[in-house]
Length: 304
Image 1 (cartoon, rainbow, N blue to C red):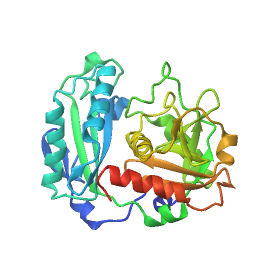
Image 2: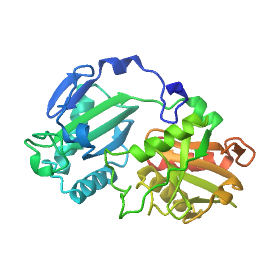
Image 3: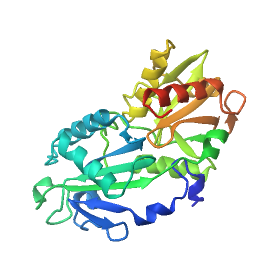
């Protein structure tokens, strides 16, 4: 497999991450001692929900939106977390405090249905409370990615309709997205661009996708892709500046002929896309309006 530093999910090495303490069900462990049972619902079946959050200048970016998505997902799969919003927030803030983190941290909060009597699908075999894990690490996106931009490859794996698997549910199960990413990596790209079942552009495997056309930014309707919080922060910031942001169907042909393109995500914020399927987007470099979208987003969340 390719070097991880070439990944769209890569970050700058930070020695402090070797010493982080991981929250597991109310206790803290060094990262190499943090474990869950082999009978855990998440390990055995991908049965659970998760959130990725970013800490910037002492503030958890879009915390309320992340909690909304977490609890909505848990309700939709009949998973009782066992904590209210304040309790979940305390797990995150306590983990940050135990690690002395005040800036530049990325948090992965994972909640599964808990340990099972035997590894089968039936939730009635759960024998304990939900498993709650919180991992906080120092993660700074690699600057070269912002300068160079990502290369995308359009995967043959499609996103799914809500009646098959609703990607707006932030589930531990990500196998079809991983398959798409592997295909993109094998093709020499950084991230996979995925189409929806109708053939319109949906999203990338781990980020939301935008194109720039005629001074407007376009992104998918999210009917067939995950519910991106950074995606909607970018849309809101762009509209607040009096600009046009469209949530609409668009095709690969419109991607290839776009003026610019970029992706959004919790870790990287706004990152340019300069090539799709070997074709340069615009002039093949990070675009001016992409930089403007990034600046507006960072200002809106207090990170600039």
